[in-house]
Image 1: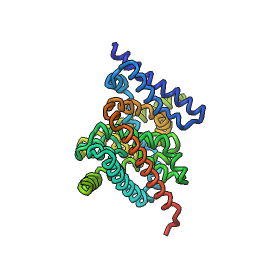
Image 2: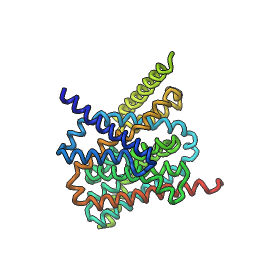
Image 3: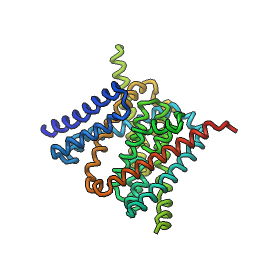
Image 4: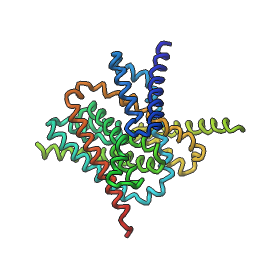
Length: 233
Length: 123
């Protein structure tokens, strides 16, 4: 009984905070007031203030975690609506996402190894742009640090979700296709979830980028990282 | 049938469809491995809609509702950052900066590439 009550409070507080911030964001038209980020920060603050450990919070909000998977499946709906358009542009999509993955993995690895001189962290940061389960599997394969990968994935997701569209607009990247693909490639499901509030077309391209980037990274990352590690010794 | 009844039936249909796709996703993941179950489920939903195994018009409202609220499902995982307090204290600023900068580079690269290829006249 106490467990049920406790689970109820965790979920209720999280959802209420999220809804209040979302309403506030809509009212003030403030993009920076991201409900996801603010709810995460509030939860961290509350857990720290009351000395509650993360496992307790995680257990009490596990129902939200269960809902994440069907929500990701739902991204297939906009993808279906734009499937024909995507098929016609398959080449541009494949080439841009592959080049993007190669460059991002290389720069992240080299930058990290030169700044921290730590191989495990460099592997983890090189894999941060893709969806968590695949990134963690490749991290393990390459002797990275899974905790750091998980951490960096959240930061990469929030970066694209909160600043993505604004940043791309600065470079006059205004086509829906370019915006969707870029955010799906750099900020995985978290960025794609944000796209779903903008338009179905954004979501469709973001979803295809999310899937393609995960597959291509799993295939090419081991080779690139082994080569760069060998060269930088 | 009243409108509300119809809507709740549609919602029930949609959630069942999503859960069945997810279940197939789990099955594929179990057999083939590779992608996480939810991503296989996403592909199964897309293909089922395309081949008219699932009625798209029944899904519309529920999908809209899910998209409006799905952000909150990422919160528990995000709070997980506090588990890595020591790592964050030691390398936090460097890691956040590198992640931030390289994410922006990837965004810009893919965005620019697609944008330019779009504006180039077709051969």
